[in-house]
Amino acid sequence: MIKDEKLRNSLLESFPDLGYRKQQKIENEHMPQYVLYTQVKKGVFECYCTRCRRFYTNDIVNGRHFIKGIAHKKEGTCLECNSVVTYLAMGKGRKSMWHKENFAVFIAKEENLYIRCFTVYERFSANGSRGYFGDSAPLDFEWYEVQRYCLTPNGAQHWDARFNFNSNENRWCKKWHPLKSENDPDFRTGGFYANNSYVVIDREETEKTFLIYADKCISQSEYPAIKGNYIKCLCEFAAHPNIEYLIKSGFGYIVSQKLAEGTMDGIRINYRSNDVKKMLKLNKAEMSLLKDRGCGVLSAYLTLRRFDPATNENLRFQAACRYKYCIDTLIAIMNKTNLSLRKVLNYVEKQEGYYGIRDWNDYLDQCIKLKYDTTDTLIAKPKDLHKAHERLTKIIKIKADEIAQQELEERNQKLKKMEYVDEKRGLQVVVPQSLQEIINEGKRLNHCVGGYVERHANGKLTILFLRTIEKPDVPYYTMEVSTDGRIVQCRGYKNNRANNPKPQEISDFEKEYQQYLDVLFGKKTKKQRLKISA
Ligand SMILES: [Zn+2]
Image (cartoon, rainbow, N blue to C red):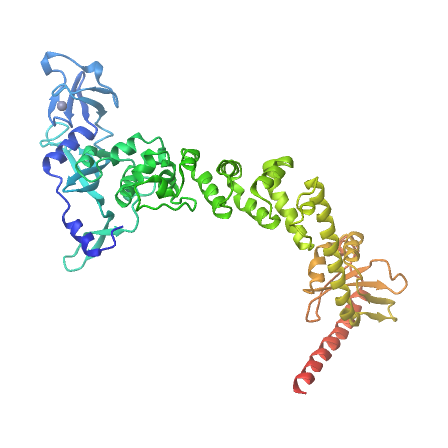
C-alpha cells in the first residue's frame, strides 16, 4: 500500500483511458465468437455472427448449403467472415444468451504500470420484429471495471470499486476504495463461487516500465505460487525490486511462500541490499547449502544458528533438514542438558530417531520435576530412553497419588463432623477413607459415583456412604452433598431402577439427616458471624 493519501489520489486521477479501439480489439479477440442460428424452414437457417455482426441465411451463401456443419455448441466457421465460431441454437426455448469474461489490462505510462480490471459481459437477445433476430444488431457488450492497480517504483496500490448512494444526485456512485494489501484481483462481485480467472491484456507493457525484468523473472520461475499470483507478485516486485535476486539465486521459495501463505516462517530479509548474501545474512557455504530448499529448512537453520553460532554449518544444515518441524524441541533439549548439537543428534539417532526427540524432551521435563540434575550426562542420556521414560512416569504417578491421598486425608478431618448414626433405624453415614473406596462403591452398587471421585477430592462436592450399623463395610446407599450442605442425591443399587424402589425408611432418614446438616452448616455460619463481629 502507498501510505501517502495525496499521492494515492493523484495516481488514481492519472489512470490512462482504455480507448475505443482497444476495447473493440478485446471484444473481437478475447470474447468468444458465436454464430447464433435458428431454423426458418426445412434446411434453411437464419444466422447471426457475433464477430462480423452480420446476418445471413445459410442456404444462399455462395450458393452452397451448410446444413451439415450446424449443431448446437459445435465449433464451425462463419460463412461471412470465416472466423472460427461456436454455433448456438436459438429459437423457441432460447431467446437470449450471455457470456462473461474477466480481463486485467496493462497500460504503461511514464515509469508506472497501470492495471485496470474489467468484467465484460457479452449479451444477446432476439427482439423478433423482423425475422427471428430483428432489425438491429442485437449484440451488446457491457464493461464493468471492478479493480485497479498502480505499480510505481515507490510501491504498489490496489483499489476496489465500491458503490455509495449519492442522495443529491439520487443515484449510486462508484468510488475507488484503497486496499491495504495487494492480492491478485478479485472479480467475484457476482458471489463467491463466480469465476475469478482472468486474461492479462498487453502483458508486454511491463517492459516499458520500471518492472522491465519482473515479467521475465516471474515467467521463468518454477514455483506455481509465483506464476499463479501474477499481479500480486508484480506488486511484490514494486515494493521490493530486489526479490528478483532472490528468485534468480535459488531463494524464490521465500517469495513463493510469502505469496501463497502470507508468511515467511520468521525469515527476515534485508531489502536494502542487492546482494543476496547480505539480504539473507548467509555466507557463501550457507548459500549453496540452503538454496532451492524451502522456508522450513532455512528458518530452522537460522533458529539453530542464533542459538548456537559456533556449530559447523553442515551439521546445522543436516539438523535443520531432519528436524525442521521440531527445532524448538531440539533447542529445548540443548538448553536442559548443556549438550552440543552433535551430541544431541548422535544420542537421538541411537535412540528412536526422529520420533524419539519429543520423548526425550518429555523425559527431561520429568527429571526436572523430580529435581534430578539434567546436565549430568548419566541422567540426561539414559542407555534406554524408553525404559527410563516409563520408569519416571511411574514414579511421578505414585507421587501424584500420594499427594492426592494426603489431600483427601486432610479433607476427611473436616468431613468427620458429617458422620451421623441413627440407632433407631440402624443406619449411619460414613465418610469414604480413600478415593479407591468411592470407585469400589460405584462398582458394587452399579451406579456412576466413580465419576465423582475427582470432584470429591477437589472439594467441589462431597460423597458420603449410607450404611447399616450391622454391616458398616457393605455398600448400601450413596449420597452426594453439595458444598452448602444440601443432599443432592441418594442412590441405591442400580440407581433404584432394578425393581428395588427406595424404602420409606431411607427417605425418612434423608429428611432427618438433612436437618442435621442444616444445623451443622447453620452453626458454621453463625460461628463465622461471631468471628467477624469479634
Ligand atoms: Zn462473421
